[in-house]
Image (cartoon, rainbow, N blue to C red; front, side, top):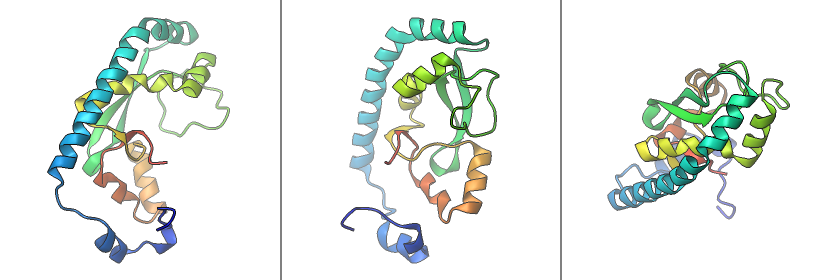
Length: 167
């Protein structure tokens, strides 16, 4: 409680019943959506202004589309499309990116370090399938694997995935 952390070893069904309030928080949900939407507008302005430069850099560094679109699992297990700048050559894959992955372009490395690759996610904030803060959205097949490996992994889908993670 002091560090506001929950260790997996301490989790069981009773913990969720005692610690998670499933009641609707209408005012909280409205305020959260307004904050998400305003953040989407602000981020969207940055995205629109920087798009010509970023798009040119992506195009010069690798063939293929400027924006990377991939299915992810969101709130209540619903599938949605996430938008990012393309940072890898060879198109989308169904695997996690490894450290020093050779598929990441030089521009892609810069985009990832500076988080510029995340700017197109303002679209997801505006649409409402992502929030400013929440768990990282993963690909559907990875979610299935993690549900097998991590106890209560599926409970993270009680909330919208986030542009920034919980950490």
